[in-house]
Amino acid sequence: MKRATISLHISKKERHLDLFLEPKTEGDLLKTYESEYESWDILQKGGIIELNLKEDHRDLYLDYEGEISGNRGSIVILWKGRYSAPENFDKKINVRKENELLVFI
Figure 1 (cartoon, rainbow, N blue to C red):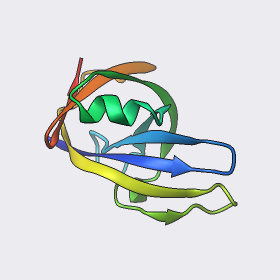
Figure 2 (cartoon, one colour; figure 1 turned 90 degrees about the vertical axis):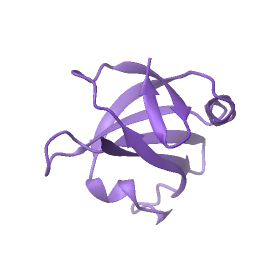
Figure 3 (tube, helix red, strand yellow; figure 1 turned 135 degrees about the horizontal axis):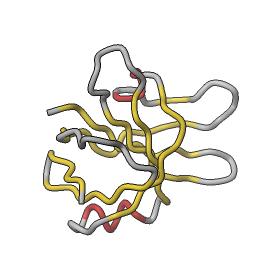
Figure 4 (spheres, one colour; figure 1 turned 45 degrees about the vertical axis):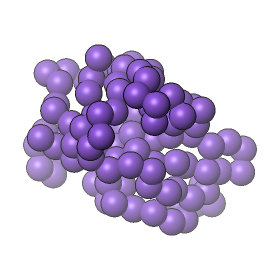
């Protein structure tokens, strides 16, 4: 099982969720997905949310909280857990949270 983190990214113009997935191969970048902030409430209640693939991120974001360089806002970790890596990472994914496990639907 690989590590996963859901963080709240707050910038001057918006706030959204970022899902960071530890890569299958050590040294690779994190697969990163984004969803609207309102999805957090759905996820907390056991619901399924859709996320869209975005640019891969450095592995420090699995544990990072604080200001983001380049005046891009700040990031706060909302949830940490584990996931079972799918065969392929699609441009859109659906997930739900079961305690400390992220389940791909």
